[in-house]
Image (cartoon, rainbow, N blue to C red):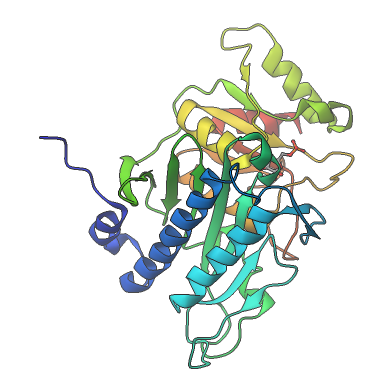
Length: 331
Ligand code: P6P
């Protein structure tokens, strides 16, 4: 008899006490994300076969060329979240401004806002490298029944009620936290069901991987140049292994399972760092801390950063606690 596998739906019901607000609402939130993930996964897996690759000829809020799948994934998640009538607002890497969402009867009684990077690492689509979706969920702070406001989105990362990512890789895995640990669910594509495959993920005691685009070395802060040299020194626990996929979700997921740190410092082209605080750094920081790790801007805990704008960028060092603390010691 094969071992009994817990489905994502069963897990949410089993753990519903962990979600400090209404269990039904959270179930609807995660179920809409689950549906969208399966839809996007289907398109990602056949991207090489149909003319969905390549540029849309448009660009997103950060001026980055939008791949057709970027725009498609954004529409899929926005539609799924809107149709379940569970959120009052959405902010996305693919949308210049946030979107206030009213229910079919025109009211804004929904209590949550979602921030999302619908398809991160999309420059890798054409070369068959893994890509991911990253999401972050907050309670609204403006009065129920009114349209969502910018302040509903400019909340510190510590206020997240849930965060997660979907990695469209050799298999498709959905990883999320509600503040009670991190769990991973792998999709069985034949059944369209996510099964609990990575219960209670914890970053290993020993960290030995560093992930950074060393092509930007010339423009790194001296502290990061010094840290890279530290990683490469021959010592009891070094040299470390360098691994960089160039897809945040893939690099973070591997480092969380194997023990490592991801670094995206300020560079010449991105003086405040490249990664966006609200829908990349904060959700990944929440997940990493819940797995026993740490996430820093080099001088501050990422989750404590007071956001000032929707697409704000920060330098980002995330992963094994001792490795992140070593980076901080160089600043
Ligand atoms: P670079 C992808 O565009 C992304 O946002 C992350 O997924 C990835 O880690 C990073 O940028 C890669 O940036 O400058 O090294 O190509």
